[in-house]
Length: 62
Image 1 (cartoon, rainbow, N blue to C red):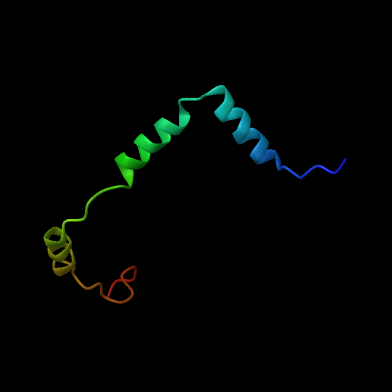
Image 2: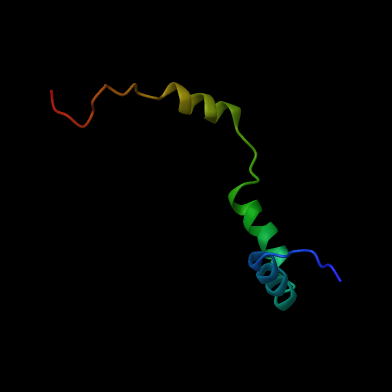
């Protein structure tokens, strides 16, 4: 009669996915929009080269 513990969060997520079966597809689409991007090495190089060194104590006037 032993049952495995299931947290409230896990129960919530199971119910959420059961009620919204299209949710995993939306998650993948959102991930693709925000995270799965190809890096442009030239653009990244230009970005790093254009960095201006910050002076110490920038919040205090000299």
